[in-house]
Length: 438
Image (cartoon, rainbow, N blue to C red; front, side):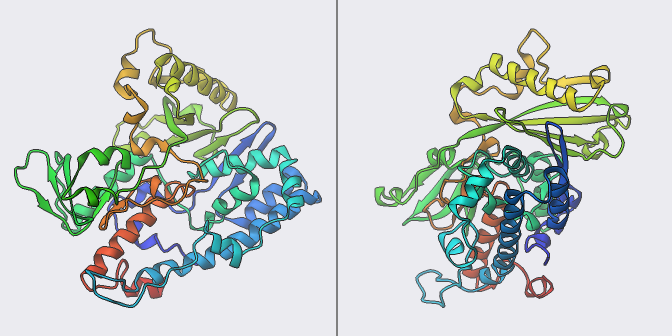
């Protein structure tokens, strides 16, 4: 399997330890524990061992998945090369950029792989443990859950050989990116909150930053927030320019996290540092085990267990009472996976056991769904790929490619860098030496 085209971009950061290229993890079902990740051969062995090698539904699903992974890998291997092709810049006619056939598109389904028959899909759907495995695997890769059927979910699983994960979550990833940018010579104002985005003739031309009197011109911009939030900052030269701005997609859920600090002895030796628990009739639970020392905390004898679940995008979920109930359920599930852990708990945040709301107010003090930040929002796979509609203004969130999870953010960033490079007459976004190596 060729290396991911994103490996060069990820390796450029000074905190490369925040990225784990092989997102191997364990999916736990009632009575089943499976080690899955990017290795298709390993997944095949695990699936046949747990579900039975002779079952026709299991066999046909593995065959179809293997085909999708192979075709997806070939499609993505052409992606960075296609991005280097010049495109139209400032009204000049230039050779049209070759657009690769990307997974998730109708062209990909039509040309690169055969959609499974209705009979096959029906057999897969009639295998509940297979559906739970697929759901857990998608959660482990940061992809949307609740797909219409297993066949639709398979397209997202096809990117597994190219996947990565952010060790420690998005906060660690942001820190890594900021350090890499500073190392490369970029100016990173820590208090530089965006106040205005200036749009002229349908193109983003500058920003107004807090605590600075003069506007800053920009050749291109990437939004790290929800398009819904950025809309209020935009200053258009004419009403016609404003009509180019596209509507933001609607989230289907948001990520809810509970942090449990325990003594190291509570974690069983040899256990995977990521486990996805899934069962029928309940949302999947992601469990990630972190070393506090890696996060700059002097607690060598402790471990931090992050519990993550996706809550529905409904006002009811903003209630502290509702969140307490969900946190209690998540904690009880954790105790089933880690025997005797309750005797090793050092602290819980937010602490659902306390009578006051201090922890909840400090972490999830959202008065409305609109206030939920972009990094917590989850979109359905059925949502179409999203752009702002404004030239030079790119989405750097999951809105850019619902159905690809955190993978869509790097893809959006690559395309934004390619656009900026082409405007300056450079091939971009990666040096030609990196393309040849990959």
